[in-house]
Length: 174
Image 1 (tube, helix red, strand yellow):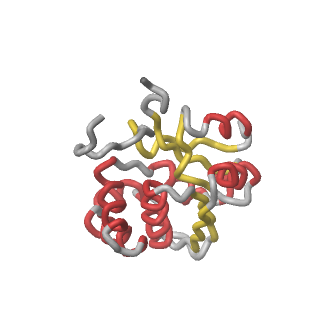
Image 2: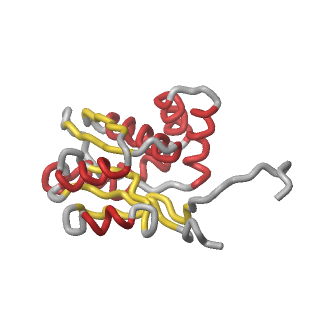
């Protein structure tokens, strides 16, 4: 019936001035794109008991070609600090832990901050976080996007065709 909305995108947003401050991170985050299969491998590994960092590193090791696309043409940095904010959803835990390792491999000193959606958007808008890979638009986070319009930069979609809804086991008689 559409009560949860239609397809959305998970977008990467950054604080204003992000490209001037950390152009290498800006480019990597702008080039970050993956699929439900990619994200699913990390999410399932975590659900099966792997630590987030282990699941992320295993995915990176198995997908060096995709990671190379995100970092192509970018020179490593030397300890530049970057803070990424994210919500505690399985999808965002997966993407942020993968990106943390990718950025660290490029020489960044990365801090991940897990918060609720409102503080995540606020942190990007007020500049206390560099970016998030967890902006669900156009519906889920629409209120925040409107509230902070003009106070963040969109770096692009990192995943297309996501949906929010309910899952019911097949053994349920509905």
